[in-house]
Length: 239
Image 1 (cartoon, rainbow, N blue to C red):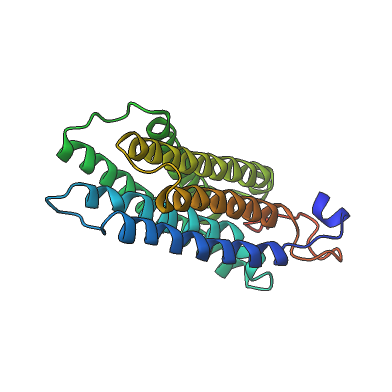
Image 2 (image 1 turned 180 degrees about the vertical axis):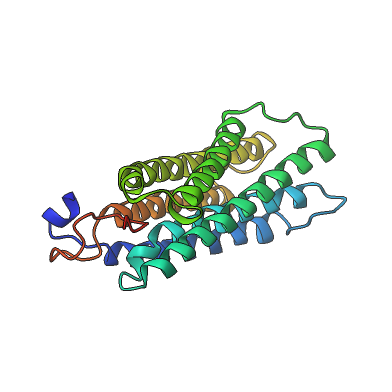
């Protein structure tokens, strides 16, 4: 891998990713709770229902999914079977929370009389969660249960890793579009374009970009640079 050739290992990028994840989580909570009034699944103020969407999608879907991607680099000496099961479970939880976050957006739209699925953000979001679920199912049946033969697993592994990162980048792109769309709506409704809330949303989106970049680099660089991990990003053992 290129990371190995440059003498770069994943650990520093996992540290950076965790710091950025913590920052992004705090920032989205401050936005939705302090500036937007809080979170609710049932409320007269329907905006409180919407607020659940960015919080769950960022913390439950993107950040938790990132942990699943990085689990092999966070704990490089972890038993393969344990790492594989953790990878599978974290992605499953992220998928469920992502679906729940999308449900909250639909509920907000339906309760408020707003049309659904009219924006690029919504299209990309639905497409991404669908691909995410398909990736999870394919990973389950190929690498976990019932599990394919060694030759099939070996051939499927790089595609599993590549497609997983592709879907992850789509999730990041969808999140960025979501921040842009919501902030544009708020500013059209009178929110100060140079006010504290606008800056908070924009900086949150920037932190998410940096976070995603750290996760991707951690995923494609080896946990070791001394030849112990020749395949670089290897989320599932092939034998």
